[in-house]
Length: 228
Image (cartoon, rainbow, N blue to C red):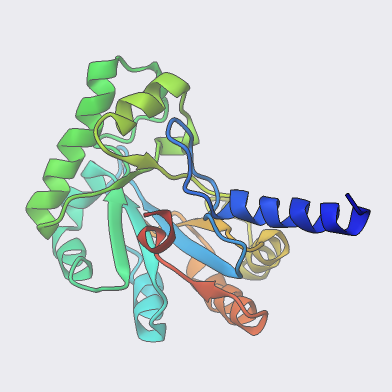
């Protein structure tokens, strides 16, 4: 077979692999696309100290009509019920599952406890928003094949991120955050930030990031648009 044809077939096969649905038993870290599309995702979590929705972020994204996904933990949900209920009515917003108690090492829990963390948080979010969650993100990204299977057995897909933004670092300036994220973003990236007041520079950096990505020809998408 001529070399040029072999190369074209290999390239085509690579694209098909990127577009194929994610396999079960795996953590999704990229969108299944070769197009310039990215997902903006935000963690809304809380441990001992009450945390509240950073409306500077949500207001900007809503006004700019940029779709985004928030992974919500149970404790955060209890302190932000009205805000979450309002966001759940917006077509361009996904509210997804980030566990009930935000245990940073859920992979160490028993199978029953893992399932309870997911199911009980879904029940709480359903009571607030009237909708069930379909994606799950492990706190701190710590997981194991067993823990992923426990979550998938409940009908979820596990979605993490393509790279860490580093926005919980207090001395990270908005320009530093923007430069880092823009240098790492590629087609299919799942970006992660915090929308609970712990993303110290995120609200200021986000317009820079969105504007530059749009200039480069990127579009923003909800997870369900491509993963499902």
